[in-house]
Length: 339
Length: 228
Ligand SMILES: Nc1ncnc2c1ncn2[C@@H]1O[C@H](COP(=O)(O)OP(=O)(O)OP(=O)(O)O)[C@@H](O)[C@H]1O
Ligand SMILES: [Mg+2]
Image 1 (cartoon, protein in one colour):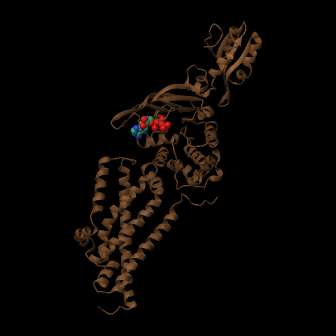
Image 2 (cartoon, rainbow over the protein chains, first blue to last red; image 1 turned 180 degrees about the vertical axis):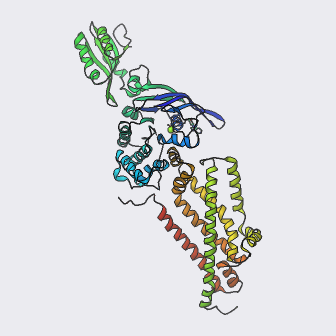
Image 3 (cartoon, chains in turn orange, yellow; image 1 turned 30 degrees about the vertical axis):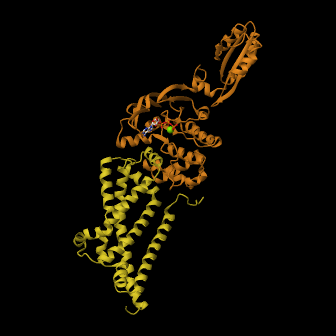
């Protein structure tokens, strides 16, 4: 469990203060993956560096499993750092050491005996799918392989928390996938709590349970991805879900619907069956005017703009809402055209 | 103009001189590395980009290093004459020349060391910090280890500079190929001795560069072939 409370950090740039973090609070529950997103300069790396105990915040608390780590010094600070595995932004492998040598570094810091070190390193390289690259130097590894070695290194000393800062930036989609798979395995096989900083929504879509949106150092959205997608006005929702194309809607609307609504459906059952069932149960004509289907992690999620025609259209909508569909009604003008 | 010195006599002159030059250069390089490496590490650690920035201390250390480095070697040679007498019991000969050479080598190598360490990517250093590594481990397994190729190169550059300085020291304090070239060659109008000495100095420098390059390749594992 990572708890960040009221974190504030101000840098001075040419005599003007820059609030990199402004009263940031967030929680990452045990064994979950939290994505931190935001535009460049939003403060993502600063947040990650504070949690990695590389940067001291001006005020606020950072708790990992309960204890506040902000004020630690000396050997206690070093011990706390060992609890937190970090994949820093950019290339961070020792170029004079093999993949195995790099993964061994945290174990050396923790003074793990050599024999144990070797077996642990082998275990980790296996976890990230690079068992055959153990004696290869970073310059001979691909970007994705280097990043996976960095993840293995971060996990070596059995931390309870894994921080990754832009682990997939500068990687192509296929390679990104291999790195994300490794992060997911870290969570599912080792049970670590993962905080991943990214500007790539595909990362959130693939592996995040929770997400926090930073903007100019403030958290403007934070919660479960599957909750946020159905919240009206959520940026996460509008970026992760399919567009419900307005222009074509207007055209199709000319046929005239009694009700036009945006419907968000989460999960297999809802996505597969809810719309047709509502249509047949209430005898309404239901046409899909826009939107589509996507997948968040393993969960299928759909966002449709639908037009309903028939006497019991309202009841059909109400029925869907009762079955956890998230329905937002579009205002309908007198002649039946959606405004 | 004297008769041309026979080759056997030339050889007799330059052989011990070559050994003396090697001795002066290698000994002062050794002192330079032993003293300059920790000084260079300290200089880097206290710098703004170092692990433990200490601006005031850094500026003082930097000033000492750079002021010593900027003293012309001939001046240093004369100034440290009395110190040499104190340390070596004499101010002449190749052993005595080691004192000013070493004094020149320490700040020279310190500056090269701190430059080499600055080239180590800060992301690599920070990654090591996050593993909970202590300062000593970071200096040893990250900074010095990652900068090893540049550091070996720095030893080479120091040796080359010292060959030049040693020739100068030899000409004034006696000893080495520099002394032979000037005293037995130039002053004695013996062109053969002069040119042979000069060529030998060149060959020494070239040889040292070759050895440096070879060692650099040996220690630099970055692009090492792997034994999978
Ligand atoms: N060491 C520093 N000194 C001064 N200002 C800094 C420092 N580190 C960060 N900042 C400033 O703090 C703000 C947040 O930076 P940060 O690196 O956290 O952004 P980011 O969200 O990670 O951006 P990116 O996506 O580009 O990595 C920026 O305005 C940046 O200029
Ligand atoms: Mg960043």
